Image (cartoon, rainbow over all chains, first blue to last red; front, side, top):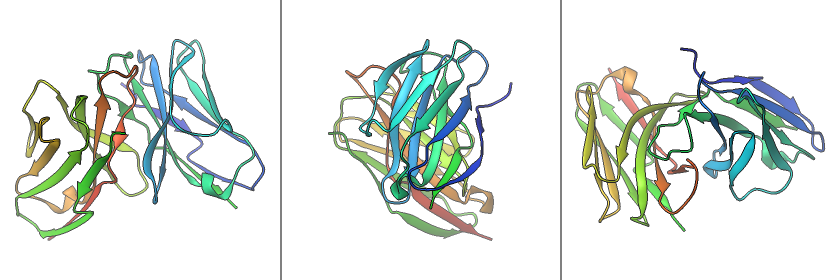
Length: 114
Length: 114
């Protein structure tokens, strides 16, 4: 069974631009979560989607948004990029919203903002 | 607010040594705790998931324990190998919160020399 896939793997953007990252969950998984990883803050939860609806949201500004499609694939968007948005963005999938279930992570998208 | 701490931040050991990684959390109202491994620049690989009702989980040379009342978990690695070199992260999932969001520690970077 294929794992979680994320595209693109690397991105370089300029301050003020916007960016869209994509995540395809493991087949059959319906919950997709996004995390931001930086050296200073570590891994922080951004948001979670299930059945095309945002179910949970972390403490990030409104510039960070996401959506989920009917096939469970998810995208996250960051508008008006800032230097501090440079990070590894990780996507994780789970079978459902059942908290007893494991989350499986993708390889991440490395975003560099210059 | 739940905080997850991992000490030490870095650890170097010779091959063959048994070692223990520590994880502590401030709020004992957790649903479960998950240990991950992260290789440089890569995503996270799930190692062990311990439900709040469990005391420990084992997988091969890895054993994770959980003591909810004291807010602590340990990951024991037996007979360490150079291939175990990576960053090890622990993460908790809270009770009373919808969804599968994880709260991460900042990790322990392990280096095993041959």
